[in-house]
Amino acid sequence: MKTKAAVLFETHKPFEIIELDLDGPGPGEVLIKYVAAGLCHSDLHLTDGDLPPRFPIVGGHEGSGIIEEVGPGVTKVKPGDHVVCSFIPNCGTCRYCATGRQNLCDMGATILEGSMPDGSFRFHSGKQDFGAMCMLGTFAERATISQHSVVKVDDWLPLETAVLVGCGVPSGWGTAVYAGGVRAGDTVVIYGIGGLGINAVQGAVSAGAKYVVVVDPVAMKREAALKFGATHAFADAATAAEKVNELTWGQGADQALILVGTVDEEVVQNATAVIGKGGTVVITGLADPAKLTVHISGTDLTLNQKTIKGSLFGSANPQYDIVRLLRLYDAGQLKLDELITTKYTLEQVNEGYQDLRDGKNLRGVIVHQQ
Image (cartoon, rainbow, N blue to C red; front, top):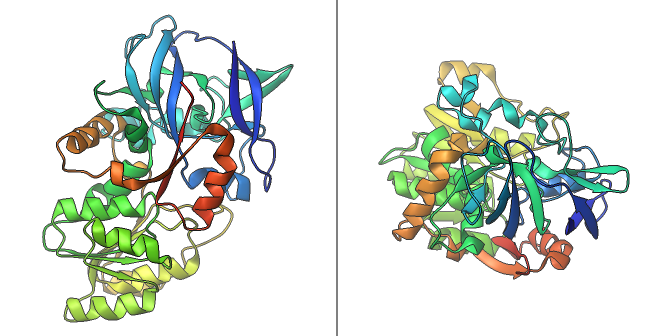
């Protein structure tokens, strides 16, 4: 069949809207008709060259939709099911899945290659194979993906909103609750209030943090963080550190969560300095893997028993936490509708990403024509 898609052919170039051939589902695969796709900053790492994939590649790794067809051996879903995609596939049987770490599933090894786990592709044009970002390619009207990349969700939930729980919401929320281990009474500092950082605010508030201090240069994002439960918001790290010192009587923060669009050495140093003894820094934001962005005093780590750790998908388990977070939303205990600033068509994908760069959006969502 044919499908329209937004494709990247090289770095520092915009997405191009083209028509591709799409293979039907093979064993263990499903055909999904996407309803919505999130405009997450991680796709910008492909265009900016921070995380160079195999080109050409269909963009998009946050997606929600309806299953249209299933291949042989599919047991997780059936045609008509409403699903949210997980950008980390999870097989359920590898070492990491079996020990409750689905976010580290071995099937995730090919997500930047854009191929299926066996190295093959489902998008084509002539003799050329096109990859799919995170094995999903949600910037396409339809895609053939692994059954291990979908999570069945309650069919009364709006898919245009539920799409955000495929990456940004659990990655941010889990950074606070799981990776950061925020507890009642803690003081948390969050660097970067984008699609992940705003949900780290929600996670920290849900966990009972006493103070949630955010740092972001964009006034709109600072204002949004306060509406989502942050107690203090600052444009720069130095001013935030002064306030944290005052709030904690010099003890420092318990957690510092780094969710900026592109991590650099300065933000890591600021985060490490703002926490007190026994504090934890969690790095969820990304950067060019060739750049060394963590340069801090080993003596400070040792004498003050500080921890610096990375977190993928907020250290959450997709099959459990996607459903869990959506049910919190359904119960009025998690804000999702309020996250969406602007909705776009597929043809407006480049406009949407420019709005993200310009700091106009908390979250942008592509709604596919139905």
